Length: 124
Image (cartoon, rainbow, N blue to C red; front, side, top):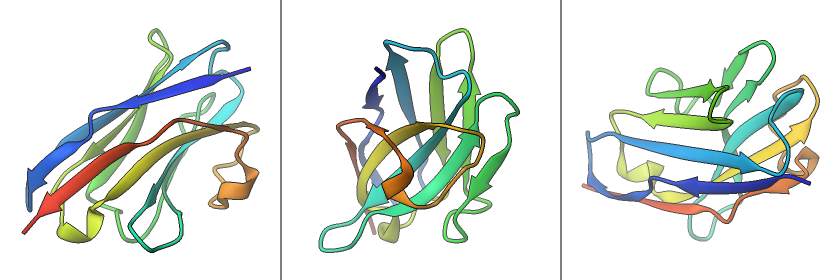
């Protein structure tokens, strides 16, 4: 069993930066794919970024490519999402998710473990 806890959300202005953290407990992230999804009010949950723990391979949605960076810290068993040049359209609840495997899938239905989410609000 894996428990995921997100942190780092908040209220910022357009152009600002935030770093989200996803800490895992119960089992290490090794041999897992970890992803960040986001869900804006009234919209479906969408993939933002993913990383394969063993190889460090990363994948991004076009909407965040060049602005967001996903990374991992093996010693802390934690995944980060560095978000720069934030826009009002980035406002959403951000969820960390993980699944056993070596592909950074964009479909939320493939992920078994989920955190509780952290709110990110970007004002214009």
